[in-house]
Length: 510
View 1 (cartoon, rainbow, N blue to C red):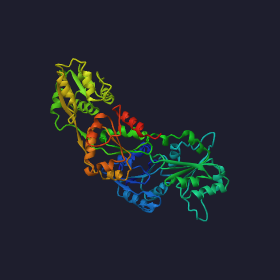
View 2 (cartoon, helix red, strand yellow):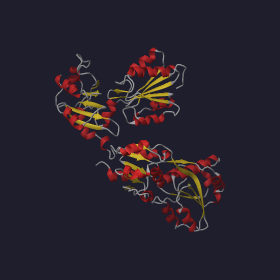
View 3 (tube, rainbow, N blue to C red):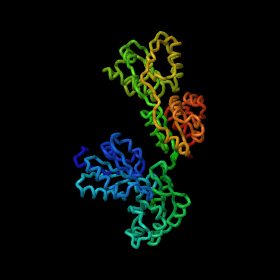
View 4 (cartoon, rainbow, N blue to C red):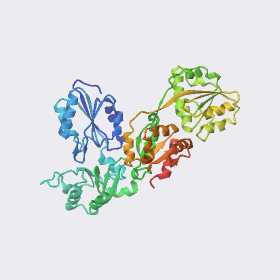
């Protein structure tokens, strides 16, 4: 993907809404772009793949409200490419299925601009799949048709062959047809489709907002009106719709429709976001802390140089493991430097991280708190032993104090720092004001403290009044309560999976 003097355009299908459904090639095109021109239905999360140096231009079309008319979009793409830039045109679904990608490609080719088409998962396939509706099934039908539902019902002639659709196709999928639903239903029944034929409308397919309404040709118009379902929606007509009762899976997830704010550091948020999203939640990443190496490595370097003199190496977090070994490797050393040193960790995630470097922990208490390490060492002869403790500079003092009281010589060395982030909380405050946040998660005391520092002090309780606050463990909960907050969920297992399960147990959809 090299920039040429004439530029180049990639017409990329973004998929129907779930950002995980974009192709690997689509992601490569986003990363390579000098300019990204994107639609309303393309997930905003996909812009995270775009270079900070690239220009992103929104040209979405929403229910007839066009930021730019199609003709102007075509000209914009052409102008950017003519200036020698790599342009990624990101379109919802697939660019060649009712996406007007063919028109854009024609214009570009006419002007000698190189074009590549990167197909996307079309909503016609994805939305029914996420609603538990297979478009074909050997017991029901072997034929399927994709049809635009956006025709003007006042036109003298229709380009749609209604008799063939009504009598010759097993499954029909209509795009953009909510406003014309009565016309669609009427034509199908007029030309022979039985009125008892099952119908489903799927709104916001593959997203946390997905909603499905079912009925028959005779009842679906009233059912849609009563449900309030609107655009964007896919309409599915056919006997396969009846399989939804058996196969639906996406909308039954326990956190479906819940919006969860993740305050964890961006470097660590992916695991929590992945698990919550898998449970159906809409995750908003709002990192209130950032993690960085210490300003001065002198103490850590001295400890690494003297590693053979230590008896124990204790890690209290994944970050401690990472920064310690990063520094070890930078000094040209590896895990063999640990030699006979015994290791202890807090929590299974820390143990797993350590094992990734080829070191199995000698002590891994079942409880994931500093106090658990102290209890474990009560059975160890630590008097006179040297212990290296690489951890956050801001960590609690209880662990080194208690180990010292037990007679150990403890070197408590900063392996990393946690800092409060500097970001605009305006968007989050707006969401809280409009009651669009259901849950806020805290994974450490520092996330509590820094989150509160970003809110107006005199409005904290009003903003959080209707929000469920979820904590990873009792220490984090205690910090929140000292700040005057009411914590509704405290995980009994102090891990990311434990936090997710506690949230589901507290208020998941039954």
